[in-house]
Length: 367
Ligand SMILES: NC(=O)c1ccc[n+]([C@@H]2O[C@H](COP(=O)([O-])OP(=O)(O)OC[C@H]3O[C@@H](n4cnc5c(N)ncnc54)[C@H](O)[C@@H]3O)[C@@H](O)[C@H]2O)c1
Ligand SMILES: [Zn+2]
Picture 1: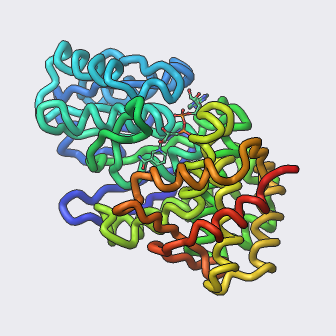
Picture 2 (picture 1 turned 180 degrees about the vertical axis):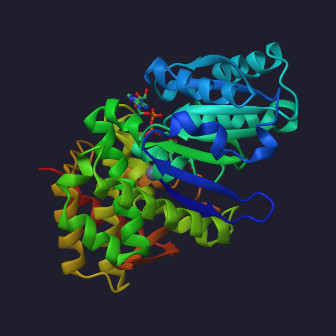
């Protein structure tokens, strides 16, 4: 097991990553939360095997806490909605959870976001634990405290920053994760390497195939490092006043591609992969220092993992560019990009002329 601290003053917490941790939940939680009689509401994605949640419940009840019946969060992005949120609030009230009790999110980023938001709002905020079961959730969404749901008008439009009391990532969960989801999550690991760690990038490039093996040491080590990078950035800028926006690398174009092509058509990590390639072209054009050689290395790594580096854009680049302006990170209509300078270093806040974005999108458009 590897433990990474997220230092945030009195809201600091640990991220534990390793095999079999579902059976050790009670010992990994801060002792104040496992006192006798504490209630834990388990809320799990329906795609996670039942045996996973029951192992969590067993660990808690053996420690004297009370695991309340698992609430099901239906698989899929549509669960980040008011109806699922209300079901979680109702389940918490029915189980008579109070301010000393705990919600546990078991699943990918969807379960983490909606259950986290339920915990942020029930009784004006109770403790919650993230138990991520996808690569993406382990390295990205479970760390940093962003929670929320979607509206018809857009993704993640309602939410709160509410840090978990712990993140417990049992890598055994990845054994049942579909390979496409696994690959997609690796895009965020590559992103972390590009923005902060050239050595991690070199390690990923040295054995890309091992990253696809849920049980490999290479995957666990890479995920731990990616978590460390996110933890660092978040601890310096919890509320995204500046630096945290660097985590958006690949995402300004990536989010626009997801929205334009239709959610469900392209996975998040696939869109981020193409987004990183397009933003690499932008960085080179703007003279950040990102070279053709950096770009080739990034393309080679993404390809070796099985992630796309180009996408069909039947309507051309303009509708995608129009979508970037709707990005909720756009301030006063001006889109700011996180851009790479070299492998291992990126910075946020770059204004990008539409012409540069257009040229970059033409280069990632499949003929
Ligand atoms: N809060 C944040 O900081 C943050 C950061 C990045 C992404 N997100 C959000 O995360 C979500 C994406 O997360 P995701 O990629 O984990 O998607 P997801 O939660 O939808 O999970 C992907 C798929 O895998 C299934 N699944 C999950 N765990 C499984 C397991 N162990 N075995 C088998 N199937 C399993 C799910 O049912 C789903 O079909 C988006 O809603 C995004 O907005 C949030
Ligand atoms: Zn992402």
